[in-house]
Image 1 (spheres, one colour):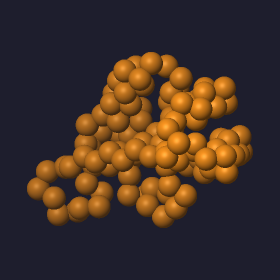
Image 2 (tube, helix red, strand yellow):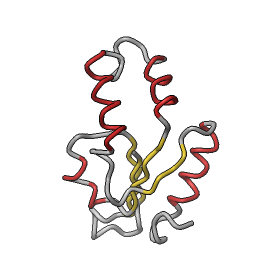
Image 3 (spheres, one colour):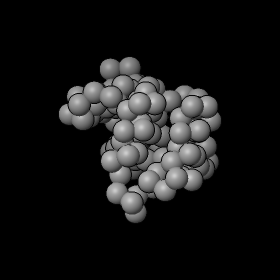
Length: 114
C-alpha cells in the first residue's frame, strides 16, 4: 500500500508539502485519513507466492506463519483499505512506479484521478 498527502497534517504550512508512505500496517485505519490518496499494489496469488519464495529468511513473510498470514489477508482482502485505489503491481517495477507517481500528482491536485 502507498499513501500520499499534501500537508493535511500541517495546516500552517507556508506551501503545500507532499509525503508518501509505502508499506503495510495492521493499524492503518488509525492514520489513513491523514492521506489524500491511498494506493493498493495488487498482485495475483501466483505472483505473491513467487515473491514470498524469493524473500530472504529474515524478511517478513519468509517464515511459514507469516507467509500464511500474508496469503490469508491477500485472499480475504481483510486489510485492504476501503478507499484504496488499485494499481496492477504484476507489471515491471518502472511501470508501476511511473503510474503511482502520475496518479499521486502534485500537492493540491485531486487524488488518484490523473
